[in-house]
Image (cartoon, rainbow, N blue to C red):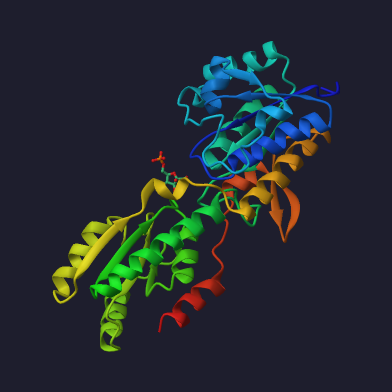
Length: 328
Ligand code: F6P
């Protein structure tokens, strides 16, 4: 356990996020800087089970900082959820002489990492990479800022056509059970209403708000719906309901879907990913394990993986107020 770490492996797992490549690049280059070898594991935990490894040298991660997706590919592995699967994965790491692991992903990735650490006492550090921003212990996750920019750009375009046709648009955005994308893009794109799982607006409030908008003479409206919201759970049914109640509304629905996960990462995501990639390697060199590196008040911070998974990353209440005030 106290032998110096000579080889670190890195993988991406779960939903991909723009900036994951920048994080991989930073991990690889930090390994080179600190004179260690780096191994890329393909297809997340599934590739770890199957020994799908490739040594990564500093020059092999050239020209990826600007690329969306993940060069290491990603997967959600069912086999890694079993003890046998994790044991196979452990044996592959030992066979390859890997002394520590960096995992880039979200809560599913960290849940798997925690089990792995508990069973094999293997050093693992996590980097938060998900567009959902739903991880406790970091102000932002890698990919979130890019997704916000992508969504705002698209809503701006939808607003053009909504306004030309005097239409009401329901726009569904991703976020799984978290409303960060919806709330922030809703404010940024000037939506009339924002539906998020963290705050139950209720159908009555939405109807009241649409009535008021109409009375105030708003000819077109944008409602941003987080995919995890209770009343917006099925955005098409919600739109049908509103149409039935308010037949004068010309309604359209746009589900933005996976386009939110793609694209070249924003500068902010590239810098975040670079900082966290370096921090993860340094944490392992300091003998940390079972932690996630994150950013708190613009400083690199660490938090236990158990907390990162279990505790809530709360929605900023002030943003809810701003959304309400600026949509009058
Ligand atoms: O966690 C990222 C995310 O894009 C969520 O916002 C979304 O609910 C989910 O992944 C979609 O998963 P999949 O790519 O498996 O359809």
